[in-house]
Image (cartoon, rainbow, N blue to C red; front, side):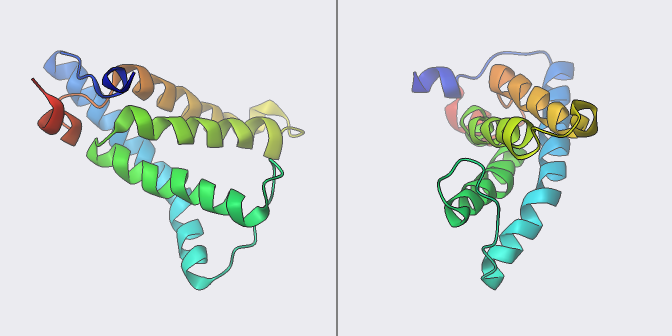
Length: 137
C-alpha cells in the first residue's frame, strides 16, 4: 500500500512541469490559510470551531497540520500523495460541515482545492520533487 502512495510515474516533461505548477501554486494558496492559523497557535490563541466534536484545540491542531505542514510537504514534493489526504479531509469538512449550510456556489475555492488535491493524489508529485529524487528507481 505504501508503495502505491510513493510510486513515481513516468510522465512527459510538460506534464511534470504542469504537476509542479499545480503543486506549488495550490499549496502556496493553502498556506495563506494555514500560515495565520500557525501563527495563532504560536501566540497561544487556540480558539477554533469544533465541527467533528473532537474538541476545538484538537480540531485546530489538525487543521494547522493539514493546511500548513502538509502544504509545505506538497510544495517540496515530499510524500505528496500522503500529504494530500489530510488536506482533502480538511476541505471536505469545511465544505460539508463547517460551511454546510452556506450556498455551495459561495465555496468554489474549497471545491477547487478538493479537485486539485484529488488530482495530486492520483498523479503524485512528478519528476521535479523530492519524492522523485529519493524514490526513483
